Length: 226
Ligand SMILES: O=C(O)COP(=O)(O)O
Ligand SMILES: [Mg+2]
Image 1 (cartoon, rainbow, N blue to C red):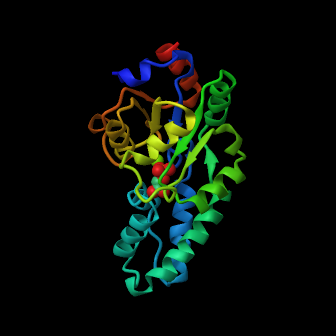
Image 2 (image 1 turned 90 degrees about the horizontal axis):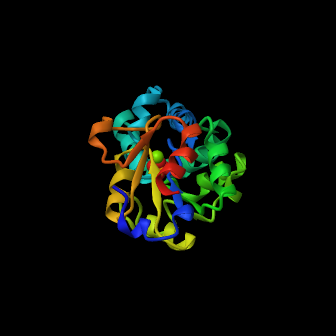
């Protein structure tokens, strides 16, 4: 189902907004490194990467709360833990890579004149570090971080902000149920990248299309909107 608000505009230039972590970039190894470095500094044993993946998606506050609960960190130390986590998140950019074909797909769409944006729950400090390290910033006409607005996904406001900056509603591409709910509340179609940090079975995530390889994205876009 493609929303009427989206098909109403010039089809060849329907904007596309992407989630970041687990969608464009394979950031879980870096995030797990950051979390386990924090745990090691506090004398705690590391957690498996897959477990740490279940903490991701709702921003750094929820991530740290879940990490504190899972590892038994001292919550009284919260402000220092958050400051150090954000430092480590920034440093994790060096351990973050685009998913295969993602950069090429973005470039292909951009070359075709498709307005591209980012809407992520990652806070702006670590987000800037990733965009700089991977040299991705220039591809996007809109970047909305987890702390750009007072609310974050699944509230639709950040996604609406991204589409406002791009000049109209379009398609949201993400990797989990939080992104799907955000798109539904924003009234836009949702495409699911299936190789990211997904917490639910595919069948439990409402989506208009699913894809597992960025090499297919531009062709899928053209088949849908051209
Ligand atoms: O930082 C998070 O919690 C998730 O980030 P994302 O929205 O880019 O997936
Ligand atoms: Mg994500």
